[in-house]
Length: 106
Image (cartoon, rainbow, N blue to C red):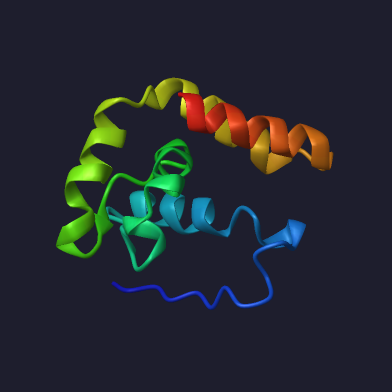
């Protein structure tokens, strides 16, 4: 099953923040794996956030594999999951920025 979501213009809308989590939970419930394909999957700036959101399968250009592997190996998924949950529920811009910084450090 392939799910495509157009991100143009909705990325910053509060109501769209949890869509990836909804897809992941529904996939798990149905016994279907959920993976991320595209530029974001191969961009190491997003790897820890994606891990925190529960994504563990990424499809990317082979040139990015070593960097993404390094980030994954250096990550603490339990901590990232806690931070990602708080990110999805915060509406304070300063707190959101602070949480994003903490994702990069875990």
